[in-house]
Every structure is written in structure tokens, then in C-alpha cells.
Image (cartoon, rainbow, N blue to C red; front, side, top):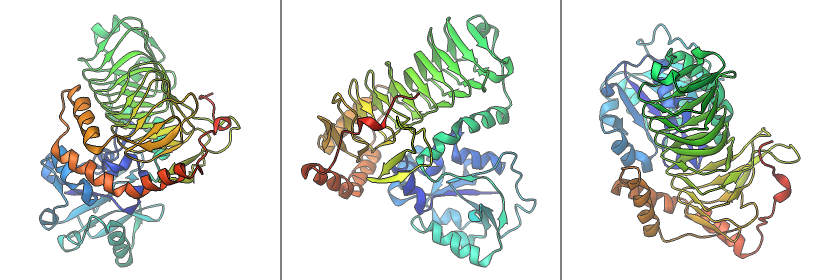
Length: 441
């Protein structure tokens, strides 16, 4: 069987996180949504079995990231039957593929909405990167769908709110637990031992505490946990990530090659991100290549305990939640002592400087915050120079393909940025909402 992961128009509802990656590459628990879909359908080895249809501006960068996967490739789609799955759909716990999985066509539903479909090549080649939703709707007219269950990821805070549950699910699905004798000599464990897995290649220094009372903990290959770190489950520490006297309070996913210190609670850090120093990060999703300056902290709870709204694209969207932190796009940087308000959304390649008060809740991509107000950022080429330095510090390269991606995004987000800057110039934006936030009580 072949699987094609796709994005529909609702991918934009997951910005700023989805600006630089397909929705199925977003993390949930200890893996991406796409990985969960592949696992649910028992996709066998061999990358030729996997394809994807993504938004046009992501095509080249996805080919760079996964050179053996067919991306927006009509020829690959025409080779035979293919299972098409919406990248915002998460299959349910204990999912069993339909018994007639290889006999199509058929349509799978989640909450009455098309989630996946097995189709022949004549239907598969009709998939267009900008028309996936219409493609599924047309298929639903022709086929009677079957309810498969699962859940939809509709907004960035859905990932954070569901993360702890999926950390537990993923740990038991992987079916591995235990520590080597070397790790047992330096590990202080509170809670059941079968809820802790430490890869043989990880380094755990003395005076480290693992608390599995409320959920399992995974420390992946090459991770380094320095003294006086405390980790509560459920948590996942990604490959080659370093913890420096960190206090992880559960519900935490750290992607690969991060540097994390201070207090982190119920948050996802996608990868290659630096939060080396003290500061609180709670109920948040932080993208890749982000740098959080010393003492940078976010609020995740209003001090009137009311529902939090998040300004996605500048328009406030009610979350239905009382605990919501911040959502930071790739390559964004904060200066020392920045204070982020409850429900803050910051785009890609932003530069936030402290102001002695809470910063604006909405910062469009490629903008800056100076003196507590949204302002113009450095020229795009200077931002690329900084990105090359940031990637180089992790032994990576900021490629020409990525430059084109961010150049495209610069134009795509221009109107949003200009609208915010115009409001600032006209003095209509209030950046003093100090009474609506408190620090993660």
C-alpha cells in the first residue's frame, strides 16, 4: 500500500507554526502527526511508498528535507492505488485499518468529515496542492463514508492541549522502558520504573531526578541531562537535546538538538531551539531555530481566569481554554527579559526586544518589537545572514532553498505586516494589557 499525506486549506489556521512546514510535520506527543498516520496504517518500509501533496511554497523545501519522498508529483500519484490522508487528522488509540484496506475506493471519516480515502490513480492525479478540500468534498458525494474516529488538529493550541495524552499513548505504543546499569548509577527515580526509558547513548549526570508518578518519560539518543535537572512525566527529550538545570513539569515535548534550561510546562519545542537560561515557558509551541534570551518568560493564564483568545493573523480567536501560552514561528528571537502575554502569536523571523512590560500579543512575520511596539525589522538579507549563523552553530546550513521559502513568505505576509504597522503609526494599538496576565499559576 502507498500513502499520500496532504494538506487542506485549513492548514493556514495553524499559522505561524504551519508557515514553514506541512501540518503533518507538526509534533504531537513524541512524534509528528504524519508519523502517527503512517503507524496507524502499518506503512511498511521503503520511502517510495510515501508521497505528499503540500502547499506550493513548501514544495522545494520538502524535497530538500526528504529527497526520497514524492512531493506534489503527479507521476507518482498515477502509478496505482493510493491511500490519501489529511495531515490534520490523528487516528484514534488502538486504530485498526479497514479489513478491505487494499480494495477501494472507500472514504474514511472523522466526526463526519473526510479524513482519508483509498482511491485509484485516475482519482489520485486530480489532487491539487491548493484544492485538497474540494477533492475530498467531491469524493464524499460519490462514496459513502465510514466513521473511523480520531481527532482533528484545527488550531495551534490543540497540539499543546492534547500533548500530554499523546505522550502517554506514544510511550506505550513503542513498548520500551528501562535504563542501563550505567544510568541506574546516576538516576534518582520517583515513581514506577517501567515508565522511564533512557537511550543507551544518552548522558545522565548525577543529581538528576526523574518523576514518573504522573506519566512516562523518554530520553532519546544522544541527549545530555546536566545536574540539578528535574523531569516530570509525561515528557519526551529529543535526540541530542541538552538540559541545563531545567525543571520540566510534565506534558513537555522537546524536539532534536535543543538547549533547554529554566522552567517548562505543557509545551512543545520543535527542534534546534535555544532556551538555555532561566525563564518560564508554559502551554506553548515554539518552532525551530528560535532563540529565547535570558529570563524570557510567557504568561499562560489570565489573572481573571477567563478564556484566552489568540490573535491569529491579527484577529482574536477564542480558544475555549483558560491555559494558553505563546506560539512562536521559526527563527524568531527574543532579547533578555522579554515578557510575553497570555495567548501571544509571533510569526517567523521576528526580533523581540524587552520593554519592561508585556509585549504585543500579535507580532506579524518579519517584524520587530522595539520599545513595546511593533516596528520594522532588519532587511531580509540581514535576517538571512543571522539565520546562517544560527544554523551554523548547530552544524547545519541555511540553504538557498530555505532562502527562497522565506522570501516567498515575506511577500505572503506583507499585507498583514503593513496593516499592523499602520495601526501602530495611527496610535490605535494598545500594548499595555498588563491586567490580563499572570505567570502560570
